[in-house]
Structure formats: structure tokens, C-alpha cells
View (cartoon, rainbow, N blue to C red):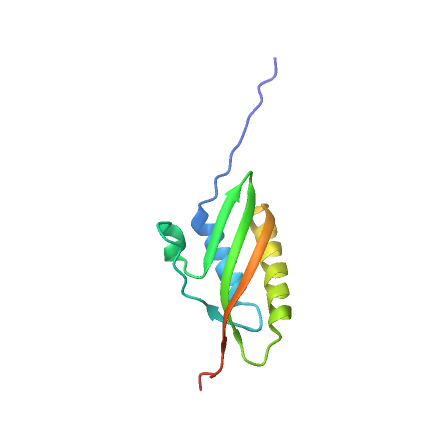
Length: 112
């Protein structure tokens, strides 16, 4: 009888939040994450502008962002979706089922 070894890897949800947040903020055209309250979900409150749900090992992500004034918000949203999906898959190997990007504002003034 062969002995089969099983290994498990557990990824803390805060790692997913960090990957998604940093990838979003690194996307050209994104000024910042929005301050959004998600109620009683403590992790979501600590990671404002971002909500992640895991269902059947698939991620469902909602992002709330402010874009820069001169940017095409549709293209910024599509780029964020592509970049976040790729980063999650490349870093942790999880499938992203859905990414909703909510543009909450456009930054009118650039910091000097």
C-alpha cells in the first residue's frame, strides 16, 4: 500500500486584499481607492474601497476607485480588471470569477 502525502496551502484573506489593492493603485489612471463602508465585515472596513468574497475557491471582487481627470474611465476599468485578475492568478493561483469596478469620483485637482 502506497502512502500518499497531501499538502495544503492556506492563504490569509489579507494577502488577497493586499494584492488587489496594490495592483489597482499601480494601474495608470487610478488616483486612489474610495472610502466605502461595508457594514460589519471588519476586514473589508480595514481595506476600504475593496470587497472580496470567496465562493467555491473563486473570487468575486468589488473595487471602488477614483480615476484621474484626463483618463477614459472605461479603459481604466478594463485595465484594472485585467491587471487584478492576472496578479491574483500569477501570485496565488486562484481563479477570479468576477471583478466589478465602481468609479465613485474623478479627481479634478492634481497634487502639485
